[in-house]
Length: 76
Ligand SMILES: [Zn+2]
View 1 (cartoon, helix red, strand yellow):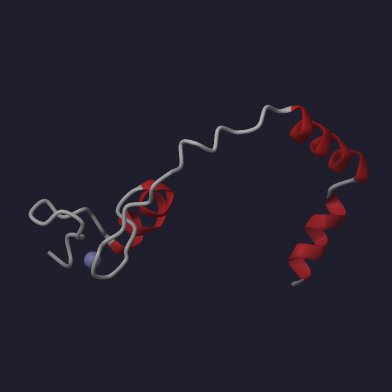
View 2 (cartoon, rainbow, N blue to C red; view 1 turned 135 degrees about the vertical axis):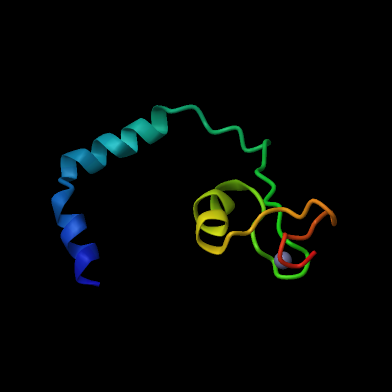
């Protein structure tokens, strides 16, 4: 919990204001292109996207199965 407080203090109020302005000025993100997260049907492990790229594949070695669609290589 202490870490969060320290971070909040580092960011000055001016910066927060600037950030908020930037967000307002920035064009609204096209939410129509919804990122569909592919997941293993059996174990719900992420097979695509951010979670797979940075967590599923390097840490757990999860890959989409080449034999069964919708399953990971561990559940095939
Ligand atoms: Zn699985």
